[in-house]
Structures are given as C-alpha cells and as structure tokens.
Image 1 (cartoon, rainbow, N blue to C red):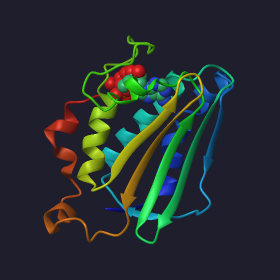
Image 2 (image 1 turned 60 degrees about the vertical axis):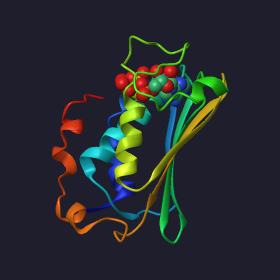
Image 3 (image 1 turned 180 degrees about the vertical axis):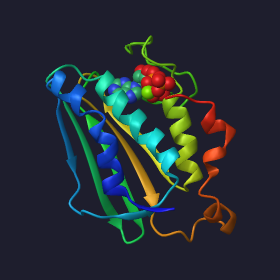
Length: 175
Ligand code: ATP
Ligand code: MG
C-alpha cells in the first residue's frame, strides 16, 4: 500500500533510541519534507531499514554517529541513506557485502549471519528500487536506497496483494 515513508522510518528509529543513548551515539533523522508518500510493502521495508540501522549500530563505536537521510531526488524518486562513522569496510569487502552469508573480516561475526544485506537487496529489487554502498575503513559507511514514487512501475497483481508479505522467502528469515 501507500505509506508516509518519513513517519514509517521514524517508527523504526524509535526502536534504536535506547541503544543510541546507552552508547552515546549521535542518532538523527534528516528529512526536510515531513511527508513523502511511497508505495511499498511495510513488512519488507521494515526488514531492510531495521537491518541497515542494526548494522550501523553494530559497527559504530561509542560516541559515534548514525544519521538517516530521506529526501526526494527527482519528481519520481526518493532516496534513503543510512550513514555511520564506524569501522567501515575496505574496497574488497564492499564488493561482497550484498552476497549471502558474507561478513567482512573485521565484523563481529557472532552478531548475525550475513543474510541481512542479501535479503535487503532482493526486497528492494521487488520494489523496482536500488541499494548501494560506499565506505572507507575507520571513517564511514553509507548505504543508499532509491525507490520510485507512484505505483506505475508495479503490475496490477503486485498492487492487489498488499501481501507479498506471505512470500516464504520473507517468512524464513529473522533479521
Ligand atoms: P545479519 O544481518 O544476517 O544479522 P550481518 O549484519 O553480519 O548479519 P549483513 O547485514 O548482510 O549481515 O552485513 C554483512 C556484513 O557487511 C557485516 O557482517 C559487516 O561485515 C559488513 N557491514 C554491514 N554494514 C556495515 C556497516 N555499517 N559498517 C561496517 N561494516 C558493515
Ligand atoms: Mg545485518
């Protein structure tokens, strides 16, 4: 269905407020527009945003920063960026980051399975969007999602089913 992306993301961010203050992380939403209506599957996008935030907090030391930006970048396109100034990744790590089970050498491998970003890429592609990353070791990491606005890019079947939620793929993963 159609949702206010800004309010949707704010709700997910609320779940991270406690960990942010515990670790003195500067945690902010930068969204100049209060309302951006976007067609998406809420169960899927929740998993994507939740994983990006949980990665940012996992790989950012105390007193760091995690910023989430949302803005329209064209009449028909919205951009979401999750940026942190944590441990970052090398160029060769970045090259593998969307692969199933991939975890970088410097990651805390016990904290996860390396599925979050591989699943996120699939979920964003079901929305005809893109997800990309740039990173520098010990400096910063930024994941950027771009989603089309409106619903012309979806097939009628996709719009009828608010419900791709029932995809076995989604049900079988716990992020
Ligand atoms: P899961 O999400 O399945 O619980 P995970 O977080 O390890 O496990 P992904 O979310 O797919 O898996 O991330 C893959 C790897 O990419 C991470 O293990 C880490 O090495 C690297 N990575 C992801 N986000 C960041 C980040 N913000 N900073 C540094 N490295 C990151
Ligand atoms: Mg993860």
